[in-house]
Image 1 (cartoon, rainbow, N blue to C red):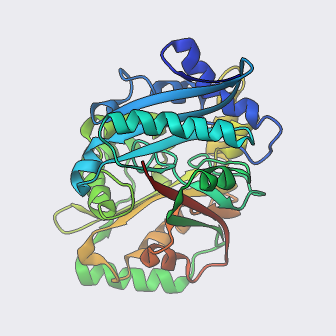
Image 2 (image 1 turned 90 degrees about the vertical axis):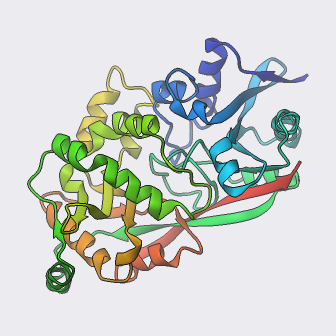
Length: 373
């Protein structure tokens, strides 16, 4: 007998969070979220996104065994900005069973319709830094910690329900340069002089965040405002992001370019890849997960390109080269082999052109779907 159960208790929430770890227990490409972080994501007292979102979670049980899960998120800020009535589906995981998948989507659709929504889209999370996009190509590659893996039968389950493509993202694996290309350095110096800009160096992480943190988030909000699915980061969400990612942040993995008024006009952040460490720890920090994470952070062989934004008035003025030159120089002491780009919208050619001069492979593709309800 198939049952769809709304998650209401802490026990059910733990089952919701841990279900994919069981579903993918024999999959070497799956990287779980850290369990406690994901539990806090769905705690209204811990996640400030609940102030602008309605959220529902469902579990699917077949013969009293958990076989699927799904979240529904109504992002009111997004709907207000774009004058739409969309519900996002997120955390969709399911056995290869169309009946189970249909029942999960039915549950979210019914809930959303009762709240006046007219379309369902996804996979999308609370905001642009939450996991998004269904993997449709690259099933034989380990996912980054910031993204979500899924089995190759998922597209079939979703499309059979009536979803169609809304947009795609592509991902690249870029070979990390062994040394700085002198051309970037020379051009970078000329650009900095021409526009009276400077790269922030020799500053502690704490001071950098205190002095430039809000301006950097403003820069990200401005740069991402027209991208698919994005919403501005509230003050509480900004603080939560810094708290969650703070331990992995290193000043030598950031590049901040400021103008003559000491205001950031370009920012980039890369993170040490935590995929293997989190995978091998099964999403648990203790007893050994923390040691694996610290080792991965301090001895990266692969890095994840997490964020980049350049003020509009400095587009196509050579700041991309400055960013890469600075990051390559900063990370020369590490034995980095490759960089994972994470998600680039397929029509965002400005971002994809950043990898034009690098040895790269477009190895993954993700999709967001849409359906009327």
